[in-house]
Amino acid sequence: MPPLEALALWVAVGFYAVATVTVIAGVAFSKTALVRVAFVCAAVGAVAQALSLLMRWARVGHGPAVGYFEVASGLVLMAVVAYLLLAWREPALRATGIVFMPFALLALGSTLLVDPAAREVGGALASAWLVLHVLFANLAFAAYAAALVFASATLLAGSAAAERFSALLSRMPSAQAREELTVRFALAGFALQGVMIASGAIWANEAWGRYWGWDPIEVWSLLAWLLMALHLHTTRTLAWKGARPAWLVVVAFAALTFSLLGVPAAYDSIHGAYLSLS
Image (cartoon, rainbow, N blue to C red):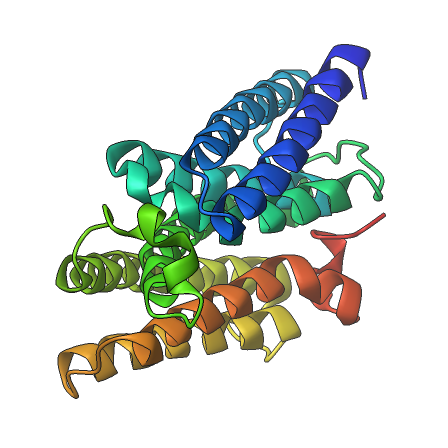
């Protein structure tokens, strides 16, 4: 990795680390100033990470689509950008960084432990369906992250320790607004992930001669999709409110994250050739 590209990546990790510490301290001690500092640090880290990815894109000739290093970096950036945009529009949502920044720090930090060497997009990878599959995977992840912002706000507001950081929560959108926005982003993520699964199936048929093979990534991705479908069903049909549907969003986001980032480490998967840790 060229020095300037590596420097930008390390700057991103450093600012994400500072953002993680300050947002945890800010929420724990109800210090709005610390939460504001964490938001600024997260934004600076996201800019640095974007610059690193753009430099890599220009160097290798393709976007973050192949190998764990690229895929993890792209997904982390999408999640952090979703959080930043929503927290910029609604400053009270900055407290939900207590969920996002540890995730961003650990996920981006994990890329420093794997081989960052660029891989050529050729053979079965050289398909328009791969581009669509990766594009909609990133968009779905961003939408799930946005739903998680509002679900996290609901869980923070309803937690036993809510009184300790009431000053941070008092200016959040109302419970009804949070739940409605959670559902809207969940629906967007559900639709986008549906396109991701369908385009991935078509690409799999081109690459491996089958549309669906119950590969671990396919199974975990389907599980995340079904969990989000359950969230939409329980909120729209059964009128669930509060913590129960919010936890479904958390679990769905965790399942999607594991399908995209955890499977390569936990399973011997056919996708390993494309999401390899080495």
